[in-house]
Length: 324
Image 1 (cartoon, rainbow, N blue to C red):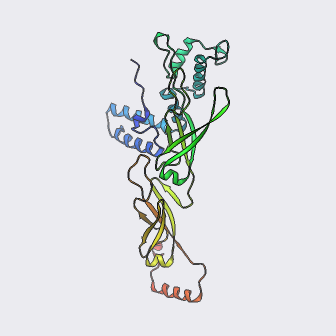
Image 2 (cartoon, one colour):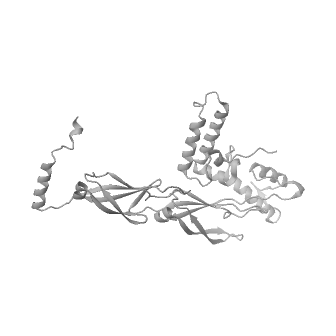
């Protein structure tokens, strides 16, 4: 029986489309649990810690993760060359798809023999031709694409059309338009997996997947921190001193916020549940309103006189703590 192949995503307990933050969180949790310092003399915990570390080393590196998603565990072997693996896959397709006259050539013009094929398929984790003289099937490669979203599209989710330029059998470029389901709360740099939308399989093998990397355009008002939203809201001096009820923008329109008396510039006020959903669902984040007190630039003599009276009513020195 061949050894069971590891699934690095299962090692960390995350989905295959997990974002970087989710990977880091899962790794830290498992690493704390199985760290040798926490489990002195426990060989099983030590081996588990090594496995967790190796999995995170691969999945936290964009290039390593891309190769692992495309080729599996064989991509982790020393000296693995992704481009060479792709050429091998193309050569295999030519061998069974009716290549050029005289048979396909591989690697410096060497004939591509069946014995070499079995060895090559085994090296790259695609399996041999099997018994009964049947040709081996080969899963199609995964494809990468970039998907640009508006800030609100990423926050709210929905559907987006993605047009790809793919090479046909005759070598000419052709376009294919797909409908991508956007999960609510997807972040910039997140990846969306479209199963079976990658390159076609060879020898009867299944197609690969399409991985769409999300790029979110910034919003002119909102900023995002995880599931929370940040928005800067100006206040007048009077509103800051006396308190007020003001309207603030949210993803769903306007909301009323109570500003307490004596609010300072830079202070954060929270509106619960007005943030962004996690891609996997769950409780909404919050909206944090950052107060920015606006100072009037021009005042008449009467207003300045009133300000002088206000200054006299507040004898507290705001800088006294600096000189303690």
